[in-house]
Amino acid sequence: MAKLLTHSIIAFIILHASEAINPPTSVLDLSDKFLEVKDEGMWFVEFYAPWCAHCKRLHPIWDQVGHALSDSDLPIRVGKLDCTRFPAVSNKLGIQGYPTILFFRNEHVIDYRGGREKESLVSFAKRCAAPIVETIEASQLEKVKLSSRSQPSFVFFGDSSGPLFDAFNTAANAKFSIARFYSVSPIQNDSSFRQRVIVLKDNVEIEFNEELDKLTEWVVRERWAGFIQATSSNLAEIGASGKLVVLIVSSETQKLNSSSPIRDFHRTAEDASKELRKQPSLWNRFQFAWLDGPDLASQIQMATVSEPHLFVFNYTSYEYYLSEDEPTQMTTKSILTFLEQTADGVDNETIFAFGGRHLITRIKRMIFELYWNIAQMFATQPLLSSCLFGVPIAFLSIICYSICSADFTVDRDEFYGDEDELLDDEDREEIELPETDDDHEKAE
Ligand SMILES: *[C@@H]1O[C@H](CO)[C@@H](O)[C@H](O)[C@H]1NC(C)=O
Ligand SMILES: *[C@@H]1O[C@H](CO)[C@@H](O)[C@H](O)[C@H]1NC(C)=O
Ligand SMILES: *[C@@H]1O[C@H](CO)[C@@H](O)[C@H](O)[C@H]1NC(C)=O
Ligand SMILES: *[C@@H]1O[C@H](CO)[C@@H](O)[C@H](O)[C@H]1NC(C)=O
Image (cartoon, rainbow, N blue to C red):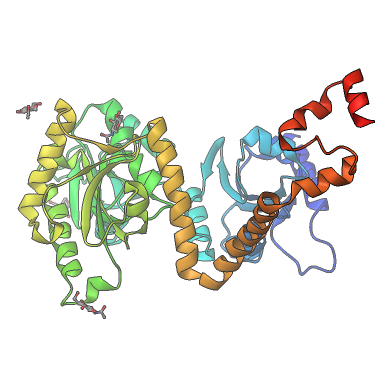
């Protein structure tokens, strides 16, 4: 009965679907009835507004995503919902910007924050729809290891019971959208086999050895490969790992230039990120990432940063720490020493933190960003920017000029005529006073 109801609701939703002129689409046009069915099965939904340019650009891609997913035989329904027509839905789901892309799976809502290409959207949906913990044979482990080089996987070894398995399951249920989880059954006569949880990444395995209730936190902390690219869209997520981010400013093009100091520095930093693994106390606190070009770093530091450069960044507090060494002089060892000092300094509160989220810093940052964006506009679109800023400024100047240089006496003369010579600049206020007999006489 409930199923029948669901079907009729879905049928009702589809009623709104594309008209005959549009080519057939596998994207459902949803209405506010969506709220009643969102927890049933899996949904991948774009929330949009008709006037939003990003949404318009996404629509054709979204249709392709719909086709790709309907071809894949996964039980994912792809839909889109016009938030201007159904504001109740966007209010209920707390949608703030357009387009917002959400995946719904059994009461979990997963926010999509990646790029807007078909491939990444489809692979995200597939990852969200995959079994939360995939059971594999020990022989399949090698394949998982290979695919985990750049995208870490979490693996549980042992019988599917006991507190460690429960903790693993909890972590997987909470975080299945950000990482892959596998479970490997024990091999009967392998005496070295014991129950454990590891993460596979960067060609190594790292075992979880903290208290069980820390497992989810650990997953969030270890979900990134050792040295990843940070962008403005993933920096918040990297920062949410609970580690301080060691940001390397280099540039994609110079990484292959054998005569460039940027390349050497990038390699040194990469080595340092590998060395870090050997020092658990540092490993738990720092995540290496690199930025392509200095723009984002300049915005964080509110100053012009030149590559190569290294700084330690706390996304939560927006504070950052700088080394006294020139980046080009740094070695793997000196980077690690700097990190040790930073860790101690943060603990003992003896290190100076730049930036932050204080009111004054926030105002400074706003001004800097405004300045930065305008400078960027002029750098990339000089002609357009000149028109954009030049025309209003020219108008403003003309208006100002007219106001300042206007001959007010002329106006007054027109108002009061020639008869009253006494009213000059100093007497202006008197005009508003009620007329006295004296004035009358004077006027006469
Ligand atoms: C485990 O035992 C099976 C047969 O019981 C045998 O074929 C296999 O080689 C053994 N494996 C190991 C690792 O000893
Ligand atoms: C970042 O700063 C905040 C506020 O000072 C602090 O609570 C947090 O632990 C810091 N994050 C890291 C990863 O150290
Ligand atoms: C490579 O690096 C050198 C030294 O910094 C620089 O002068 C040169 O322009 C770079 N080459 C390219 C293709 O960017
Ligand atoms: C900071 O504290 C650590 C212990 O947490 C201590 O070993 C270290 O000497 C302290 N550093 C300074 C500069 O006080």
